[in-house]
Image (cartoon, rainbow, N blue to C red; front, top):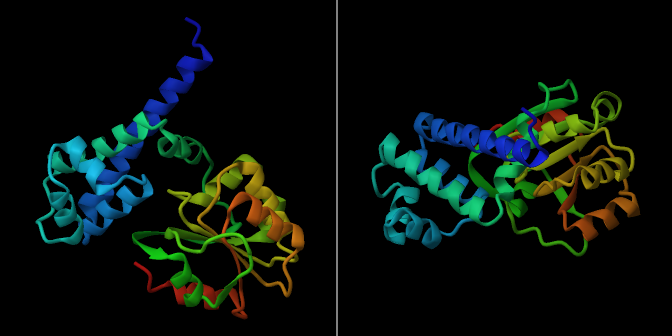
Length: 247
């Protein structure tokens, strides 16, 4: 029996959806702060409380109560229904968020190019994150107002020499709504070109170890609408230390 490209794509989408469902439910159930995880994933899917409530057949205030902790965390059956509704809403809108996980699920194990990687149980504002690691915005036409749900600290030299194009996707961890911190950077052009080619845009890019950013790197950031900043901390270990306290 011959499987067409359309059928293969549909099967791959369904597998990604099912795995994502299990991963999110597991994260919520095992978390000490399930309300934060619930809110984090609704934000990742970019779904309003009202739209989610309508799909679930409940009021927006109930969704708000779950996310604030005012209402006791629901049982596993309700959580599954909650996440299933998020996935349904994303699929109806084209499934872009689910599709973004297809590539990350098929990438190899972590490389030595990754110094540190972490997912947050709750989000942190881009501007607050920049202040935390003493990073100065350099892109001129981009707003630094989004939320971050994880970070990856990358050894740029190793990434360039060791990672294939497809392996670069692994830098995004579980979600693209994260900050990619490139260390040992000479000009900043190569990381931005690589990001442009992957067609997966992080919520923030931070460059470390350079004095001045290449104009082409800044231009790419502006055109692709990617917040770009330069970290002025002296050592990579300082960056890691500053980020230890983020939950």
